[in-house]
Amino acid sequence: MRSFGGSITTGAGLPSRPVGSRVLRSRYAAVWLLGDWPDSQVRAFDGPDWWCVVLGDVTCGDKELARQAGRFAAGLEPEPLIDRGGNSHVVWVDARRVIVTGDIAGTRLVFHTVHDGVAQFASSSQVLADLLGADVDLGWLALRLSCPEVVPLSELSAYEGVAAVPPTSMLVLRPGEPPMTMDRPQPGPGLSLSAGSTRLYEALRAEVHAPLTGRVTADLSGGLDSSSVAALAARAVPLTGLTLDAGQTGNEDLAHATRIAATLPALRHEVRQIPDAVLPYTDLDRVPCTDEPWSDAVLYARTRWWHQQLRNLGSSVHLTGDGGDAVLSGSLAYLADLSRNVPRLVREARAWAQLRTSAPLPIVVAAVRLAGSSERSALRRMRRELSTGRAPRRGATGRLRWFGAPDAAWLTVEGRCTAAGCVPDSDGWTGNQAPVGDRIARKAVLAFGRDHRIDLEIAQTHELRQVAPFVTDAVVRAGLAVPVQERTSALEMKPLLRTALHQHVPSPVLDRSTKGDYTALHYAGLTRNAGALRSLFASSRLVASGLLDDGHTCGVLDRAIQGADVPLAGLNDVIATEVWLRTNEARSRVPWTTREETADDAPLPARRSRHVHADA
Image (cartoon, rainbow, N blue to C red; front, side, top):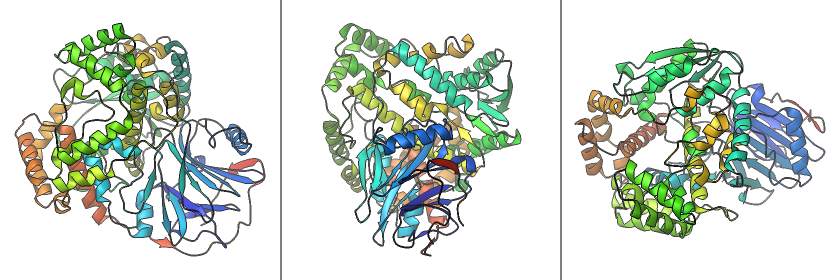
């Protein structure tokens, strides 16, 4: 697993680091790199009294990064390298402090702990847990099972004693002081749909084109998001677009993908039939151990097979449309921001009511009530719902809330109380004055980013470079710059994206207004793997921990195997968590060394940048 970390130097250097890591040193701090880091993803910049390291993918060049670093050093920007694009971490070092940040979607997280009196930071919670010899944090696990949307706001991690930095914050370390976090500027909804669409197009085009080297492949599912990315890439380079064929009647994905591919001369279209051998819930015992539970663990066999198809094609970079739903539109909570525009609120409520065969008036009332509520009250309500086990409202009105309703039925009474005790008081960011719907939409991006972080880890494990342009910094900022009430509607799918691309991609790309449904594959996989799934919970780690209600879980599993309609998302997450606990037990721990490091014999030239070769 590729990761990095470090601490403020004390005396001779870094007090401890993972065995086998390499070290980048400066006057005030050292950064270690673990795993195979390409030179293109490690950039360092040296100023008169500061040092900065960028780790990951960025869109702008070294000259622009150095300019931004100089602006932050002069106090002209609120955070280091604020407009770098891509998805990356930044470590900023000067005589007063070390600042560590990730990307704004949360696909690049920062963790920290204190060991032997020294504050350590890292991009992996597991690596820091191995330094401490820490166990899994059951409170965090209970929170993730019941209230996954709250997890990105929490400072807890999957391991005891290891803290997470929410993407809305930066980690700040000062010599002799405990770690602290400070707010970072958040994207604000200030652009019209027209102005925002121009900005979105420019950002998306840049982020799609930036990684295009070697043999390029792209998802071409037939959906709006992946087709848009593939079409923009095809304007720059030849590429191969791949479509999964599930062999299902009534699923229009393949037909749409074929029609779109015919309009893109630079795109070679290939179709892959999903074999029965990789149905969901297959080969759960082969899922690798990731930094946190992987939400799509039940799809591991198919993911591994899919990545093999890409490697067989010689893919150097694979583009996906992942994250488009989170960044380009919002949940029903956008209706809260229409409470002062009653005619449109009523029109939208009627449209949603028709889609869900319900009445519009309760939707209007719930939207107005949400507009007048606060996040703190919503979190207090969540704690009450968890503690009491009271079932929240269902249907459209039940979705008009700050956070998804807690899924507490999976947990024991002890598990519910444990989860309730881990619900944070707020998102920790005091400067957020955006309307309710925009704040909720922002949290949805963080929730997606947290999951996508593990998707990228799996791809890296399979030696595949996967890029999701919709969750890069520049595209997220462009998407969130338009109010959610402007970019979401029951009457039009993703109006912001359609407006941004209508002159730049073939019209069939933007014609799709539906999504494919692969639920039938899950039920087929449940039947095929029934024995292995029942065996998984016959000796459940979650049950042994006291968190999981064995009777409820096994009852839902049995009904699902028999083909009954059950909450598949919740069941899949329980299975993924059970699998993760087992892989965490079996994984090899990262050993740490306390060997002292010598002073830097070859400091970087002032105000210049170069690729850095770390010391072994």
